[in-house]
Length: 320
Image (cartoon, rainbow, N blue to C red):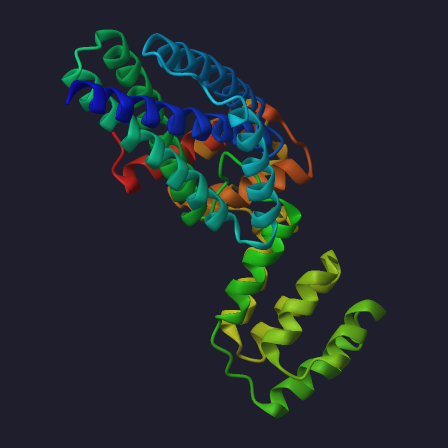
């Protein structure tokens, strides 16, 4: 019984080692997506801590009479690269849910390892399992917070890649109920002909409101977005107009008069930080951060906003 349990313990440690190597590479991939320097440092530290955990797991396997698989780190890197490539076609939340699934598997296996090590009376491995449980529990909470931040409208600790942003926007717009009449679309097209040629060309090819909205967003033109929002709102397509406005706010493409903080451009860093902390709507925090990053890009303001939103997200997600 004991030898069988020890063999199972070694097998689980090898599996966790492979998953840890994947986790390390994922953390290093996420560094480039960090919104602030503080998050970048945290992710860098997480990757280093992961390498230390991997070394500890290797030692435990050897002490139990096993041999770590040499190919493990390579497979971990390969898995992370494939994951990073695949998620470019996914919305941001799906990519993070994949990260969360990995962490949950590591956490559950660490708990199983602790039980196995307790049975075979391996206190060193029990201590290692406790270390793994603590680390992965913290990462699960962090990823859950990032997902909650994203659900609340951001700014999340991690930035979406351009591909993820496009995928998410397209999915949201395609699910917006469209109630435009043919006559309303005709009037919108007539109005749009006075806007820049690029927008006119896009609109002339689109007969469906959702198609028009998606192509307009893809143009990435500030004036086009503003005009599209105005046209859609005037024609009664409030849902589409709201989606376009959200896209403008998320990209910082709003006028200072549209910001949720009065006279924002006149505030210094400490005043802006204090004002941001008074915001209670996550969408307002998102708007301020996007505007700040697009204009002044004061890191103190962005970090303060991120911290403020994280506390709101943790409360919503039930994380103490």
